[in-house]
Image (cartoon, one colour):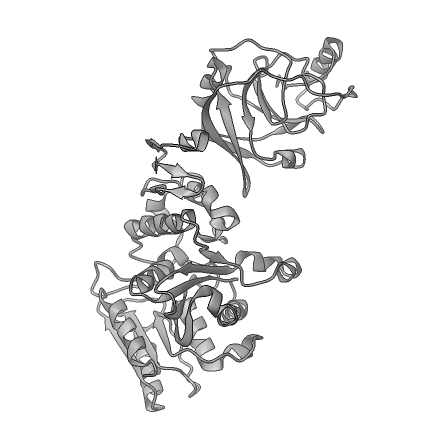
Length: 485
């Protein structure tokens, strides 16, 4: 028999409710009186927690009592929830009772997390619509975020510890370790940054509050990401790619967090709220900004992924970061999968940057487009056909296109200066086709170069530690050589 928390206003009603729980179904709601909730005495806080409801994260705390300590030892928990009392509380079951139990009572406050030993279950009280809980419960904590969405939310939740004393005190800081995530002196407004490691869970990065609603776009929004996936294993979800560097992944995650925590805007929507409402797929688009020298030229980097997903963590973020280190302002585009929609998003991104150049602090002349695999096709198509062909104002074409490992063959005669690189063991993009295309661009009187690397497969990215190492510097030099003097 599954026991459930039932919240009523009399023990008689409670007994009736328990009788209704003798089947496998959850008890229904009961008509109750309403009134102001009984106030609880002030509680000392033990630690911070996060409650994940899909893409939404609620903040909370656990109190410094023996019951809360027992619950904390069970975390993290991922579980289903059920509606203990519609309009009042949602609940979830525990697999075992908590051994160290405090004194139960009947008081609560909005946001209360309350333990019922007979379940054993935890109630999450999202609305102060009852005078008291007649079932005796032990307050173990409180949700400090608005928890009203619990009334409608019916999917699984995850509750985990946030071992960050600054989130409780707002001062000082400690060096702690939890699930591979090391936190040092982290503050809401910045301070020293969280240090992610190769063992940090990807979902911990996605749900880091500093990233707001766009954390989910740091990793492929169109890929399934398991709860156990770490930064060190991101390469496992990047189909068609090779030489994915855990060190680079960790560096980029930390860089993005440093920038966001310091108050820099690192993500920009390219579509308006009205446009996203009309086409919800546009919710998964935008630009990550890797700042260089204010007033310097800009580049847009475009990851591949077969027009199925966007492999930014390996195929565009590293390039953008390295460009920023050289002083250039680099944007990594997150686009809608699909050749047409991807090009429309790139055209919109170029329009957005031109229209907001002063605010962004960039020079729009002689900009460059970079891309790998499918992203290289995007860069080439915009370079050849221009932004107007994809629904935007006709902005100037790029000063250079930098392409990696894509078997595009067409040449229109309108190509900008083009640099390309590929490996001889690429089973997706045949290097001979790329060599031929570069030759045809050169025959049109346009500067073009290609580097072919012996034995390299598809998707080598920056190529660090391979025979391709150094191609990136050559590509930057090519761009610079083709800037107007």
